Image (cartoon, rainbow, N blue to C red; front, side):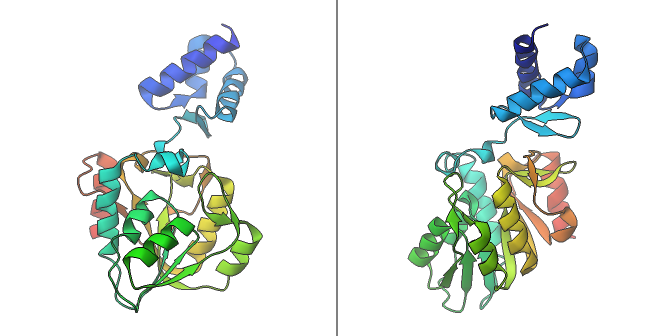
Amino acid sequence: MLSAQRKDHLLELLARDGRVVAKDVAADLLVSEDSIRRDLRELADSGLCVRVYGGALPVPAAEAPVAQRGAVATDSKERVARAAVALIRPGATIILDAGTTTLAMARMLPDDPTLTVITPSPAVAVAVAENSAARVLIVGGELSRHSLVAGGALALEAIGRLGADVFFLGVTGIDPDHGLTTGVLDDAVVKRALAARSADVYVLGSAEKIGAASRFPVIGFDAVAGIITDPEDSSPLARRWREASST
């Protein structure tokens, strides 16, 4: 079987099964695992899959550029955002990550001048200013054209001088095997730095992120206070994390 045919087969498996296990495909096609890994690497380089240990997963919908993500799981994000806002206490200092769910949170914040909001996202900062009396602190740095979030050395230096009660963390994948992940390496670095400066971290888990995995790990499950899922998401993983958060 030619490489192009193998790649088509791999993409069919991803669409059908939601994952590819390299050793199983190699055995089925009577080719070496190295050949399958090479095919998966080339597919990943073309943005058609996400490589993980032992194989590959589909590209999460949450990894699309920010301009496209606004139309993905909109209702689920609104419900997650509402649940997250309910955790904010008066007078708190919170960090809102970049992302469409935190943008929804920014539009729901209480009109509380004692609240301080820190964010690396210009869009989130503007939304907070337009919808709340909260104080707004923007983390500066180089703006990513993909995620529209500040990053790089300037951002990390600024983050090192901050502190917060709660960080509402946005990721593109929440999976029990692959953890909390995102699709851009620099974003993962910024997220880890923000988490390290926060007393508590809550992960925002709208429906399209549950069970998905991206390329770059952010932080471990043991470093978060809870995962905020969509109360209407009936998937086993979402129910599992809701139950864990309520105990």
